[in-house]
Length: 117
Image (cartoon, rainbow, N blue to C red; front, side):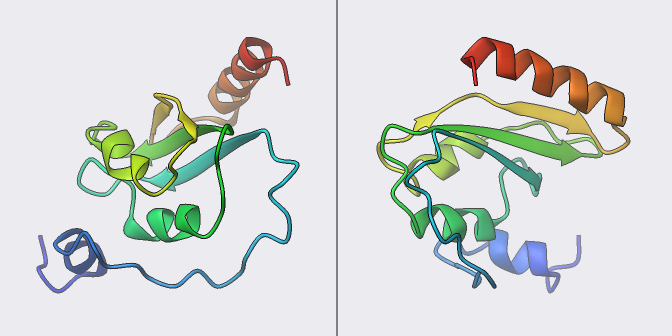
């Protein structure tokens, strides 16, 4: 609710792109990316857009995974689509903030079987 908080400032300016400290050296061999982040106001933080915009994700599967105390995935994929043109952006998964390691492992195992990787 603080209008000067980082999330408020970023989410009020959709063009805002905070810097990413480190870059991936090679994305050529990535076939699938599980992209994890906290949900801010029903979307990914804008640094996720910054990250995606640095690479070519054409024909690669991206699965957003988020944590949240109460918000759902909302417009996450809609807000991410323009940052990863050509990617196969899946619906993804939202976990409660207090998710257990067991729940995450069960989801991950299911996804591995679904996408055969």
